[in-house]
Image (cartoon, rainbow, N blue to C red; front, side):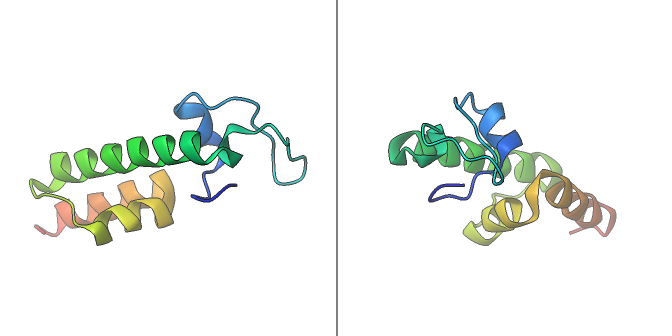
Length: 88
C-alpha cells in the first residue's frame, strides 16, 4: 500500500500506525503519508543492504536492494542462502 507498496508486516516492523489491509483500507494508514512511507522504505532498504553484506561479504547494489523489496523477506533470505551455498 502506498507509493512504496509496503506490506502490512513490514509496516508494523517499522512502527507505522493505523495499518489497514487491502480488503479493509484505513484512510489514516501511515503508508499513505509520503514522508513516513519514504522513511520506512529507506530503513528497509538499509536493512536489506546490511543483510546482503553480512551473508555475501559484498556491498549490495541497487539491484540487490530491489530484489530484497520485490522478493520480500522470505524470498530474499532464500536467495541469499543460495548465493552463500554456491559461493557467490
